[in-house]
Image 1 (tube, rainbow, N blue to C red):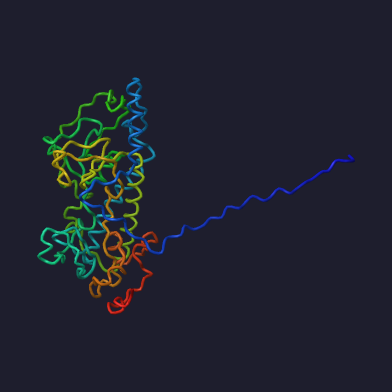
Image 2 (image 1 turned 90 degrees about the horizontal axis):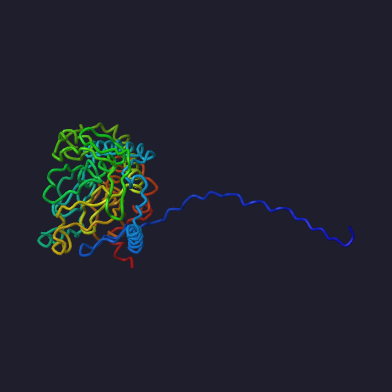
Length: 388
């Protein structure tokens, strides 16, 4: 038609998705060591905790039950049951692999503090924080290490019903202490005959902080120590070095790779389970409790425990509190001279399990290369003095 102008344009092409590889930092510093004269920071911001408490209180005043989803209502999460079994089997494989590797890889631990070193000899750093450190000018008193020096033993009370009655201070000896990771797997669906756990079919009901319905009545077994001590051998680090024989040198790299893979499975699996299942940790000491609320045993002896009558300051736990990485110095040449104190800033660190596996022949995962500082050339002590 005359007087009508028609414009047309080609539709631009949509931007193609470009997958970029996540760049790892060249060097990474370890998380700072928290002071012992202060409470640990909350993993969840305190304002969010207060806001959630206000909402629960408001619902309770209105007489409305608190909405709960599995596993907060006592029911299992079906998708996490295979994850729990995978973590449990990897935990047993991790203990077995470390016990076999320690027959060949020397580990040293300080008898006065918690320092651990993986090498033929201990390092010369004067940073011992033990009670008798002044007499030795802060030098470490090295002794032969064990599996417990690599895997820090974090234990928790085993409960038949996590939503049942709390553990009191006078009844604490009536409950078994097992590794916290094993207790987490049991509550997530792993069945161990020696440590039974209640499997609910009816959810619990809560009004505010009060449980008004525990999902039916069920006779709870007596809380006496009914488990056979020998049943703990498979998933406990106690005397693991003596239970497994010395492997041959040709099998060492294979065992190291399997142990490294088991360590990653446990680490990722625990993180996945803790997103759903509640784990509490003391804000002052290393005590951990797997369950919706902590126990009432008065065993805390850390900062200002007199003000709390020895009670723990429970808060949400982190993965590192349940499965500590236990960082140690990375030694590039285990058979070489001990690490020098003057070159301390040039050395890197790694989790103790990773350091043992790497010295046994395993490949270094990309995740730990930045903190191990592999790209830094360690100078001679005389050269280090000339560096500003």
